[in-house]
Length: 176
Ligand SMILES: [Zn+2]
Figure 1 (cartoon, protein in one colour):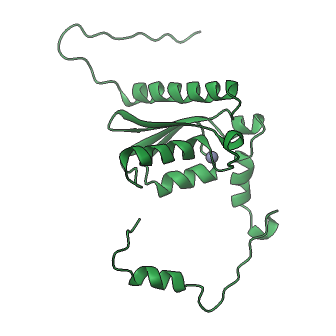
Figure 2 (cartoon, rainbow, N blue to C red; figure 1 turned 180 degrees about the horizontal axis):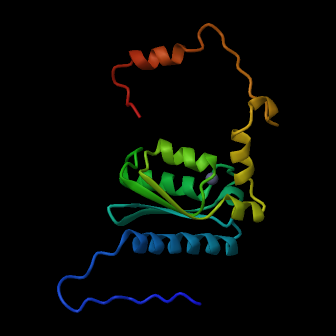
């Protein structure tokens, strides 16, 4: 049986505030639209946007191949544009809507941007079906680094932590 939805229209009083689910559906639809349109433009199938206080701050589409930038994921592009738009390196109070579950890079970018909430449509399995490494990287993070295909070595001279001494001694620093 097909599920049936009915739009409830109020005939009196002020219009009902849309529910969180309705708002989410609206922004997610836009993120998917951005992602699909980006394919036609020669980019990767990913779109994202940043919303705060009910308003759109910025949108982003995957620009990895176009910009020769492996970090130009849709979420990162949207975060960069949003920060420029609001003139702040913090996006606290914002929601990141993205057409696909953020990869570890983008999830970390959302953490650094102090975004409050992430909402995604497709997931890492969908991305894997498209040939993307999101799921593989998540699985990599759960394994010991000794098993990783990328070498991560520590070289620690005596002044390794000197930059942090300089940072802590700098009275005019901007904490973030
Ligand atoms: Zn990403």
